[in-house]
Length: 459
Image 1: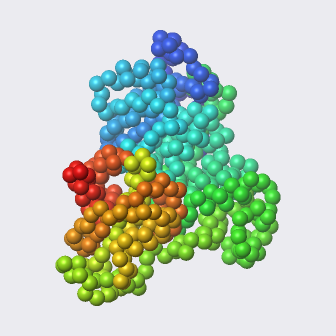
Image 2: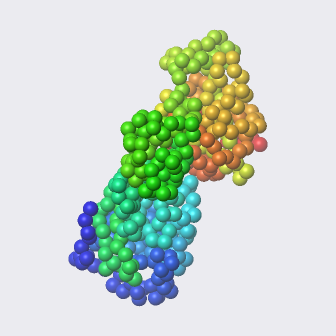
């Protein structure tokens, strides 16, 4: 990380930024964090750090007059500009009128709906974030589930320092760890106030974030992780032993398992320590066991008549006909909950699928299996209605599937070994995603979705 030169040989993006803003009718608002980048070489360096190419979809937050935009337009597959100021949004719409690869969205980035972006695949993010709401924007775009896989962001230096801080430093805290659990962060350079109009009163830092592989850490309960961090850092200088919600666990024994001192404070523990504590305090009975090859299922013939029982491992290894259930859980808005399967799943790991799914145990009915899977994977119960059956085929994994629907808006409690994350989406959003990127989904879900949509059209 280095300080960016105060002066560069690059030309100004606009020789008279103030004059252009006057013509547009925009008076920079401090409350909106409107500090316009005026140095083209600085803008180009920021864009280059994103490593975007012609196959990429890029979202830019707060494009303003287009300082970064001009180095991206025409060089990426699609560029989505999210601008809150209506006059600047109108200016950009006029400027890029006729360029179908540039989409201008007049919207508040803190409330932006990311769900339509999933259909475009991995997204790259860039922007000069307003200091007043940078945290809210980052949570909106970077907290899972998100289609964003890489980002280059300009932030107030104080905020950036917290994102890349090390244990036992003042800047190190909950924000550091929440970010680091999902992203590899790198400081690129610090900018003084010179390349901006109006000049901010603080320095800025350009930061690069790359999403972590889900194989880097063992799965963990993200809700519990956040809860532990909140408790630990509420009074960061106090010892953890009196602050942590450890239930009936013995603090001394827990410290021994973690390899930390009994007098440890929150700011002394690194990310691996916090993740290990989260896993140890996770009481979900399935936290380490998404499935077992020893589970016994019914084997069936071509007419779906039970012919015997074999273990899960044998059935999958031999490709035998068997049974499965899928559950579609809708909220009151008619949106369907999709779950992303854990890296530990033996089939379709890291792919998106039905709200809940699984196999009936030997002798178990479809309906009872659906109720059990919904309770195990989502932590909820509900009135289930079977709406269709699907014959066994290669796409279903040689499973005779019964699809059930129910209504429940959550919140859901899922074992981290089974479910990585989840999201409610509208029928249209899912349809677009399935059409453009079927490889993101399990084949079992795709079979259910196709049959569900065909049934819906008939109705």
